[in-house]
Length: 283
Length: 283
Image (cartoon, rainbow over the protein chains, first blue to last red):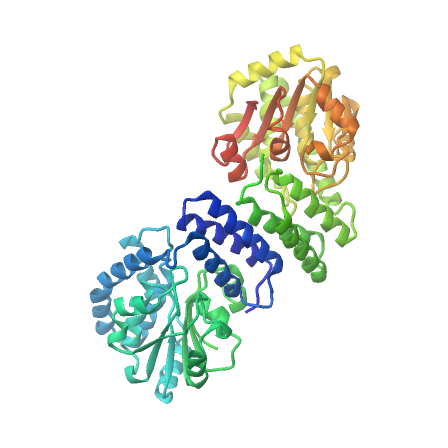
C-alpha cells in the first residue's frame, strides 16, 4: 500500500508521541522531530507508510541511545496476555468450532490496543474478546482458510505485537503445527514482537519461529533478510496479522489471508471497510 | 507565540483539507502537499504558527489560480450572520449590562466555527449564543476594559473571520465609536475578514475600518503595512479577536484584551486554560 497525504501528519504525531514516551530529554525531542521533518520532505509516497515508520523509529532509538525502548512494555504485555491464556484456551476448547473461536481470539489480540502509554485493563481485554466473538466474520474466508491449510505444505504466520502474540498462539495451536512457521521482526521496533517475545509467549516450544531480519514494523520485504525472503517466496500460504503486515504485503500476488482490525482511516479505505471493522479476509 | 511540535502535523492536516476544499484537481493537491512538506522541513519554530499558515495558503491560492477561494463561503456567512443581527441587537439592548452582553455575543461569533466545509445551522448558532451567555466571564477583565476604553483615545479592534465580524459589530456599537478603528486583513486568506466583509457587515458605516496590509491569518506585524504598524504602535488599547490574532500579538507589550474561544490544545496550554474555554482576558 502506498503512503497517502493523510499519513504524513499521522507520522509526525506518532513520532512526537513515541519520542516523548522514550525520553524526557527535550533536546532529543527537538533533534528527532527536526529529523522527522527532514524525512517528511524527502519521503517517497510510493512506499508503504511502514517504510517511513522504520526510519523514524530507528532514528529515535539511535538518538535516545536505547536499542529497545519498549522492552519493559513488551514484557508487561506478554505477562498480562499469558495470565489470560488458560481461560482463553478453555474457551477455544469448549467452542463448537475451535478454529473459528481461535481466529476470533487472534483478532481480539489485535483489537486490544496494547498502546504503549496504556495500562492493560482487564475490562478492556474482556470487552475486546466479547466484541471479537460477536462481530460478523466472513465464513467463506474461514472455510477457504481451512481448505488452504489442508492443501499447504508450508504456512507462514506473520506476527504483529508483543502481548498480542499470546493470542496468536491460540490460533497457531488450532493449525497443523508441523506446517506452521511463526515470523517475528528481526530486531526491536516499537512494541512489535521479536524472538524474545515468541519465547515468552511459548510459541518457540510448539512451532518453528523465525525472524524476518528487519526492523520495519511490518513485512517490508526489501528490508528483510535473504533467508526470510526465500521462505516467504516458497511458502504456500501466508497468514498476515495486523495493519503493519497488511500494508507491506497486500500487493504481493500470493495466497494470503489477512487478520486484523482496521484502526486507521487510510487502511480502512484501502480495505473498503469502516474504521473499527474486524477482518478475516482472503487476498 | 512560538510554534510547537504538535503544530506541525496540524498544519499538514489543515493544508490537506484546505487544498481539497479549494480544488478537486489531484495534481494540485500533490503539488501543494509536496510544497507543504518542503516548508515543514525548513520552518522556523520560533515564529508563530500563523507565519507558516500564511505561506501555505498563499501557495494554495497560487497553485489553484484563485485569489480568493473562500469568497462564496465568506459571503454566505456574512449573510447568515446579518440575518441574525436584528435579534441579537434586541438582546443586547434588553440586557441589564449591554456591554457585557455584546462581549458575550462577540465571543459567540468566535465559538461558532464558521468552518469552511460546514453549513451554518441555525441550531448551532443559538447553542453558541446560549453557551456564551452562560459561560463564566472574568468580571475584573470586563471592568478593566470599561475603564481602559474610557481612558483610551484610540482603540484598535483586530477582527477575525467573515460572518463573525457581524457579531463584532454588536460589540463595536457598545464602544465609543469615535475612538474605535476596526482592522481587517489586507487581502484574502482562508475565510478571514477583509474590507469587503467589513462593508457587508455594515462596519464601515459606523467606524473607521482599515486593513493591515497582510495576507497572514492573524496580525503578524512584520508582514503588515508600515501604515498599519504605526497605527498599532500608537493605539492606546487593542481588542484582539480569535486565536490567529492572539498567537501573533500576545507577546507584544501593549494594553491588549483578548476575546476568543480556545479551540486548539497548544493555544489553550499557552493561555493556561482548557480547550473550549471562552475567554475575555487582559494581557
